[in-house]
Length: 166
Image (cartoon, rainbow, N blue to C red; front, side, top):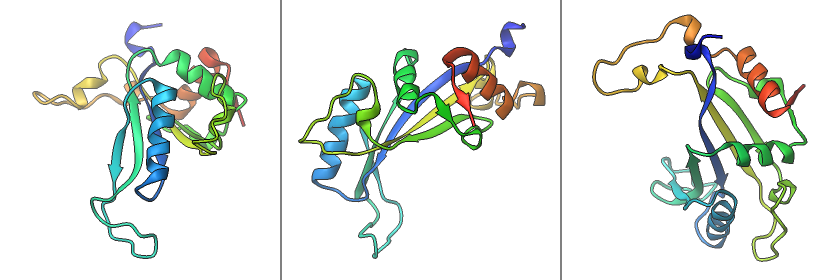
């Protein structure tokens, strides 16, 4: 296979949407820091939604992005899903799935202070050379054959991580 056609993981993003500032947000921050080993960043509301109590600038969630050494963490996150991911979770940019409760992740024990909460996982895949679409100078587009199709993303996850696609 051509080196430029190999699929690789560009980044892994973990997200917990709490919906409100306060104690829940602090617990979500602690959980993501324990899981990823990186300090999470707060996400803030952009629209005013009075029925939910959300307004612009109000912290409503936390997220963390990991770009290096994602293999070990991704294996644990897939194990939490019992290696089963829906076919509809795969897109041209990668795969997205949710974990209902963090206690399903191997190596994570229940903490009564945190309670039970879930998280969203987003894996972004790319091929070498895809950076030309994002760079500042001389931005260019990539060819159709270089864009990752959902079928190719499925094959990559099945081969590398032993995922079962339903």
